[in-house]
Length: 226
Image 1 (cartoon, rainbow, N blue to C red):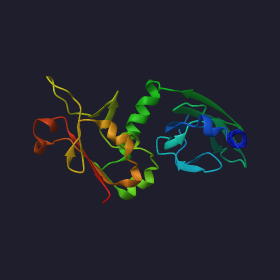
Image 2 (spheres, helix red, strand yellow):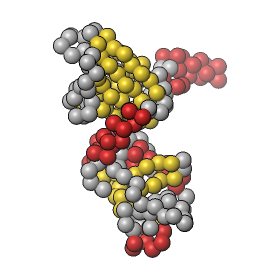
Image 3 (cartoon, rainbow, N blue to C red):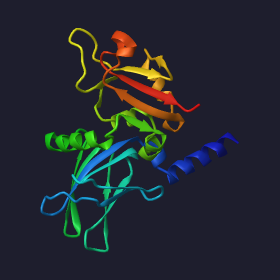
Image 4 (spheres, helix red, strand yellow):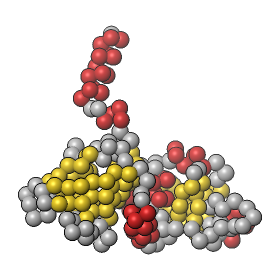
């Protein structure tokens, strides 16, 4: 019986190799045409079995939260009845230049200076409000809270800490205070155990005077659904 079970599991894994190597994270990139001009409002699709389609922004940027970085990106060739396939190959950042019936792709684990500038400008526009409601949380397709926070304007991640840009203390920690359902958190590892579907709202406060000295570097308020 044990041998049959092991054989069955092995067969499933062989049919679904992504089960072994799939890694979910945010996939970001910029789409250019053959003349190195960004392609705006253009659909980009990740995957075929469970496809996720987004459109590039006015800066040619596409951002797919919770993406399977071992999947394939599909992009139609402008003016042609054809699509190209670009393996993501485990990278977080792609710069894609579409040429005639072909493409050039640069894969990176970290964005270069030019790409970082574009993505930072884009990221700051993703959530103009300092609050994400339940509908926006669902639309984000994020699978964890950290993914959501990366989309919040003014929030940055540094190592295991969460910070709010433009806020900081000279003589103390610059970490933002995280408040979960009214309770200030000392251990942020608890955030990894909460799925976004169980959230009602996330807010970012640059001034958290109501929390005393602990709120001096800003406050991130997380409310779960009751």
